[in-house]
Length: 312
Length: 312
Image 1 (cartoon, rainbow over the protein chains, first blue to last red):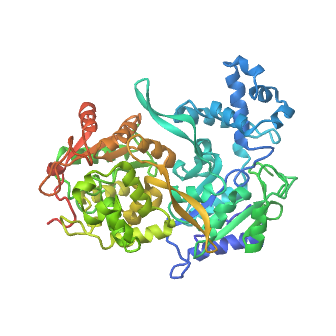
Image 2 (cartoon, one colour):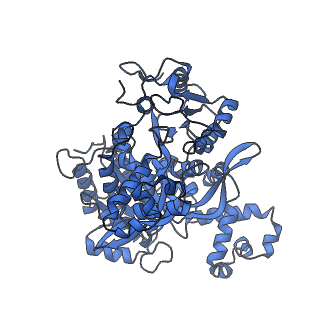
Image 3 (cartoon, chains in turn orange, yellow):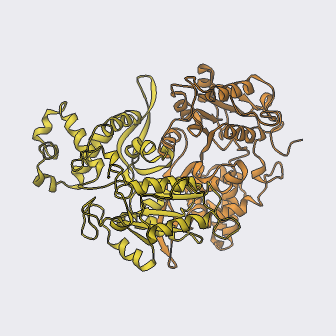
């Protein structure tokens, strides 16, 4: 049987079918001498990050980081004030921002996310995360995480699961806070990446982040990276958007116990309400497939008793 | 202090300086309230595979697999008996084999290692490993592993280390035996890889191995992949050839306790003797750097009391 917590299991989850489904699933893989039993340590659970473990509105939190980095770096690049795409960002010109091309964004990602060593980037991202605040809540971005999901991560680990993040966000960016905020160590964070180059700088060997795409950890890239990094199929996958569909499909092919979950952002009051029409975090095809296949759709409104740790 | 085993620590290691160096190092990172202390679970140890954990002569064991696969597949490809590079392999024509180009080898790797799903490949490799035998010892390849290294892996894990393989060999190939033979789970195996494609086959989602290079996990590729997959610096790195030099250099940049080890194959009687002049497993630049920097050179002849588990 599942290890019982001292207190109530998943206290910030409402007493709904969803919570029962999760607990029943954990009990199933935890019951020895049944066909669904999986030894502890072999129980892999994968979580999307943006929109699943923390919010992703008004846009991805990593984009706030990019903007703040450009502003900080503009001190040494005065010409950016007259050069697009930088000008649009520095002036907060919404019209110009809406016209940014993919090439513009890649250029700004290269400027803010490459050229430095991995360790330097971790320091930059780490110090930003310690001070930057979300505009709506005036809270650190790392506080805008979902309390029920923190409890779910803990509950799964208490029951012999290895919890992984499989994020479209940058792997180094997510690693900068995953241990402290989610209790997930760097080796259990999979994300999008640029390549790194092993180089000698000032007499010391370092890994330098270079402006070459490594992997886009989104859509079909998620199962591909899960196999590359983990090498076994997850028992549980939790996402919130069409970008997570392939990861859920992959998990659903496991021929024994599995659980596919989709978080539906239907709580405009406490968080945001969006699905099919949203540019960021669109939940459309994955919604249809979840309904058709009986995957678990988690309603933020109904299933989350609390949303953020700072909620009353 | 390090957790003491019930019996003798590292019984197949001779009582030499090397053994003391290893035990002292483990005790150091295990002693609380010192600057070298590292919490269990954050202790990363990385091991090369070919030539470090098992033998690599007369040539890489994965090449035996490739040859046996070509022979098995030739039944359905009779034209291979008249077509190079296949003909050379099928006939065991040493002269023709010595003339094989890199392109030939890539072509044969593609034929034997791609086109199937990841799961199919694991079955193929797994069943080969259960029957194929090393020509010199007439033992399974998975028996041609170094007993002292098996003990070292266990000893490190008993003392809170996560043990990783970082191999130039194919990641799926090494994963096919790493758990059973080394006690290393798939998520702690890093290797060279081809790309995979998430596809629908016969109504089921699968990952298909495709003939496109993913990553060559050798030389500078090793620290690059250690960062990508693990995201923190190893405390201990163990290799045996110039292909491991960058991994050792990277580990040596850790600003606290670290241990860099190189296995020197100097035992032609029990195993093989080779170093600077060897085509496979050349130990030349890494040897010089190890001597210069005081890394630990492990002599198979002097430090290994037993080589293989089947040795008397």
